[in-house]
Structure formats: C-alpha cells, structure tokens
Length: 122
Image (cartoon, rainbow, N blue to C red; front, top):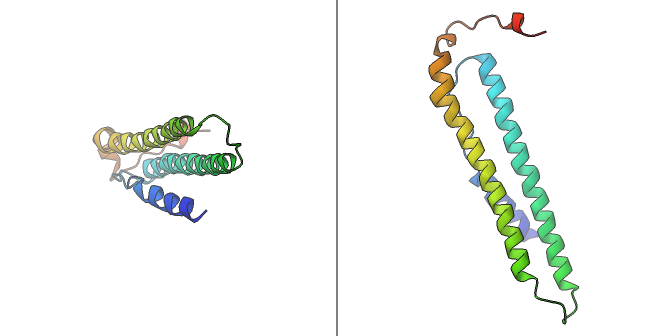
C-alpha cells in the first residue's frame, strides 16, 4: 500500500501548475472552478486506477499457477490509465493557455471595469 501512496504523491505533484492569468473577479472565479473540476477529475481517476492496480495485484497473488500469463494485459491496461491521466493534464494546460492567449486578449478591458453581468443571468 505504501508503494501506491508514494506513486499518488509523485503523480499529484506532476500535475501542472494551475496558476493562470488574472482578468477580473468573475472570470477568475469561473476559471478557478473549471480548473478545480479538472484537478478533481484527475484525482478521481488516479484513485480509481490505483484501486484497480491493487485488485490486479491481489488477483495475481491468488491466481493458480496454470493460469495464463496476464502481465501483458495488465501492462496494456496500466498504459491506458497513463494515457487518460496524460490527456487530463493536457486538457488543463490547454485551458490555462486559452485563458492567457484568448481570454486575456479579448477581455483585457474588464481588468479595470467589470461590466454588470447580472442582466445576463437569472
């Protein structure tokens, strides 16, 4: 179990920095919510994948000797997990880039004067 705790710590620290260009309170709050959702997705997937790896380890330890070798299947399964986690990290980076490259350029004028958005929302 300690092994997976160490892996969890390492992977958690691999996640990219979620700092982003600040624009105004409204957009910054929404951007923070979006990025928190991405972090929560990453964490939930990571926890689930760790559970599956623990189950694989238990299953292998209880497997009869005559059972087919399942190591290649497990490795392929683990590689799929790694691709999913990498995709989530890329999504987070794309969102941060979008904020810096698109939102900041298009909404720079709101840094000093945030329009009243109440009329757009019920």
